[in-house]
Length: 436
Image 1 (cartoon, helix red, strand yellow):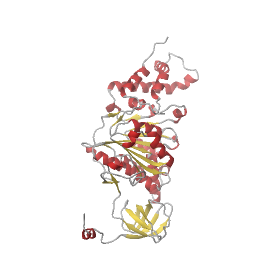
Image 2: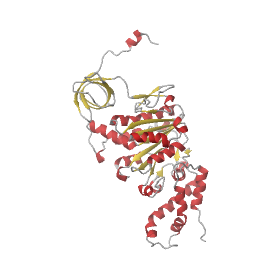
Image 3: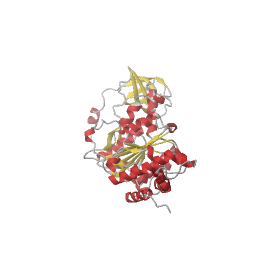
Image 4: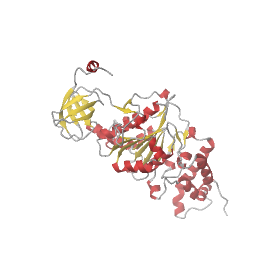
């Protein structure tokens, strides 16, 4: 334990102080203090209250800050003190089983165990330090294991509009995937859905090895964005400990929306559909932190992508498809028809299927995709009674097996299919029957 002279010697010799010059709903402007982009400052109200804020823009001696809480009691002339701390979170094994906020502070209990400080914005990974992705993960979901394989260290997006089943599919994956630790980031969700996810989507066993990071929709944009960085930093801590981590984020679109609010407050111009240029650099910077490392653990990441207006070509979806190692698209048309999980196989892809599927399984997957494709092209003719049997052998095969194909692709939330069971079911769905 240090003595008081040692503690006194560690105190700073000066303070970096500024004064608030403008207060708006979007942010706070101050003259000074000397700070860098991303630094944390403390705002001191006239009533003696203190709140932290993040530096989001610097224009000469003018600083733009976004507070982590509501600006109640804050007036022009309030003191702004730069804190000599870098954005970081305290993490440790005691987080397992906990629900924490964007600052890794528990909201449902106390943290126990070893604690380590992890930066929110670490240096980029060396590409040569990444481990290859060649170990398949069994999800227990037939459509994914057979057609859209997921590997340890892969980053996959789940693309869908609102109410199509993203959360249900994430819940199935959280229950079924085998990982040492799971980190789930609920970014911008409704408060009701947090408890619903914990009680209905996670089993008791899965909850014990899971850290849930929550930033609900009513919280400031800077807090919602920070929650995504916090969840990733927690996953990086467990990866550094040599563990295999499953990181799930629902949703990364709301992270992009929060970043847009921050950038607009900082004075950046809106571009594609109102999104600012920095959003499209923040997305890959966040996603590239995941993956496996040579001689260490891995982070397998699943990002829910809320597709605006069911338009798969909207800017955030387009940027994420270019960044991730694959995408699973959920179809509203299939969901409306009661087909769950509503995975649109033809619009979905895993970029690592050649590394993760055996040659025979790859051929089976290609055959199923070809049947789905020919059925999609000609099903209108069948519905109108214009298709003549025998004119297209591939279409005949698809029609003959259509019920079994749909049965293979459908799956109840509580149902789990092992890899041998999935392969047997796929072979059965593709086998041609002799007409009686």
